[in-house]
Length: 268
Image 1 (cartoon, rainbow, N blue to C red):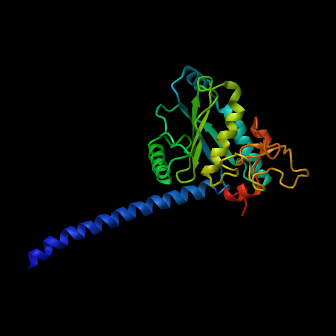
Image 2 (cartoon, one colour):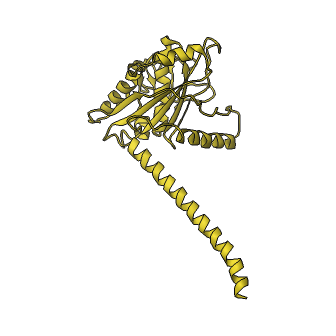
Image 3 (cartoon, helix red, strand yellow):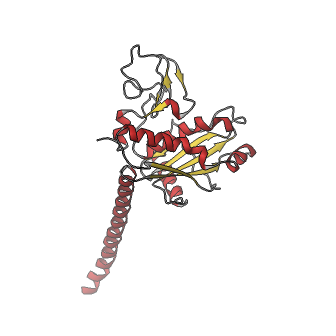
């Protein structure tokens, strides 16, 4: 009878032990994620952002652009975020530091089309975080990593895949144009996705792309309301009228609104 009890009890005990170990691992990962997100949104110390270029289509145009990249190509992202932090009262000597890292040869998993199910999006998100976990942390070690994927837009009819930023994992994937004259516009996209990693939400209608009023307007109290002069970064575009939009040509035409500032921890 004792033998029978042991033969039934040991498998049950090991099953419970495996569950306890799994829960411990999940709790450790969750704690690590929470700690990383808290540090990234602290703003009392320098936020380190690592830029990792990737050739998205294997084209010569993307390869040449990546070969010519320098830290200075992304300086306006660092300046913009630092200036916006100062506008909200941040007194850190260097609020943000953006550094260019070596090119990566392995592209991130492609995102599912917008029409796919929520489950597809969740699966893709997990794949992306697993892929990012296997990539370098950056030097110095980054709080958030921006994987910038270059495409030969001349060969794609001027279109590139959609970009994405994940707060869980502090990972941004920005799909941009390889053309040199698109650098400043690319930086708008990259900065937008970086703010997603810090918890900022989109502030535009997914169907029409029109900025949401008032949180998606840089000047919500302006009279007349249109045309707006600047872009709220998380709205992504400048509303010129109720139906007309303009993509900002650089971060000089962008700002971070009060709601976005709260979401990323700049204000309470």
